[in-house]
Image 1 (tube, one colour):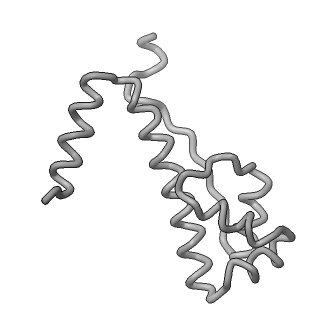
Image 2: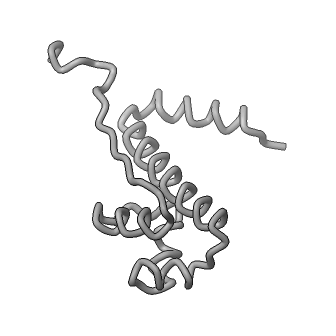
Length: 104
C-alpha cells in the first residue's frame, strides 16, 4: 500500500532528476490553495456554485473551473469579484526567493 511518505520520496527523487519540476509543483500548489480557499469560503457562506456565480456576474461553470485545483487562468479582476461576493479580501503577496537578488 502506498502512502504519503512514498509519494514524498517519489517527488524528491523526481526533483533530484529534474529540478525544473519544482516550479511546476509550486504553481500547482498555489492553484490548489486558491481553489480550496474559494471552495471553503463558499461553503462557509452556504452558497452553491450557481448562487456565487450570480453574485459574481458569471456562470456556474466558471465558478466550478475556479474551484478546480488545476485551473490557473483566472484574472486578478475575477479573483477580486469572487472575494467581494464572498465578503472576503483578496491579498496578493510577492516574496523574494531564497536566493536574494543581490547575489545574482
